[in-house]
Image (tube, one colour):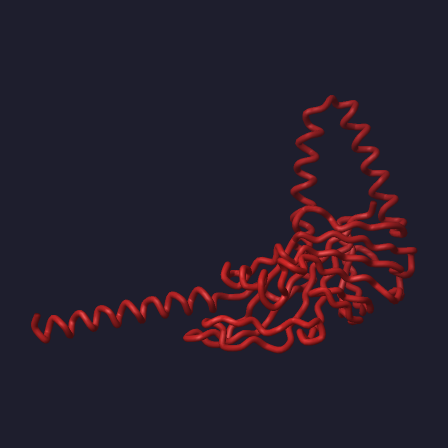
Length: 261
């Protein structure tokens, strides 16, 4: 084998290694999901409502005209009542539009700094509103169903850090009523802070979550976020050859869409 062939072989091998590194860089440093926003949440809620309406319309089209007119009248009355009286119990819509998740800065070997974002749509909850005050809120999330853009990260969280295989459930319970300055109107954005108890990794701490919400298509749409220190919940740093470091704190973020029950 001549020196020239050896040199060419080395160049090809180096090019391949560079290609794999670039591919990994693109994969792991791809655009993370945007932080939660009321605009995006409203769009998700509106899209879900449109799909539900289309499905309902198709179903009604297959019934006789008398039944269709009766259903239409009942729907109109129910809509008016909901618009005029928002007091009562509200439950999270079970259509996959609600989620809770995390946003954490991490440093990966040969990659650099990146933002890890994981979310779960396995969420349930209730909200109580008396017409002027949100008196109760309870949210439960299956954190074992958290998904990010990397399977290795999700699998690691089952055994390390959040240890979701051991602590699969996270909950938030409101401890102080949220007093609203006025009854929400369609499309009006309202800001508030929710004080409550967050149970994560088997540890319960008092937290405050900054929220923004609105009423759209007879649904209450809420987004919020807060910073949590992992040490407060007994969450240790994950350990892996590819992970050089993980921030000591992260952002808890949520998108919740309620409908009256």
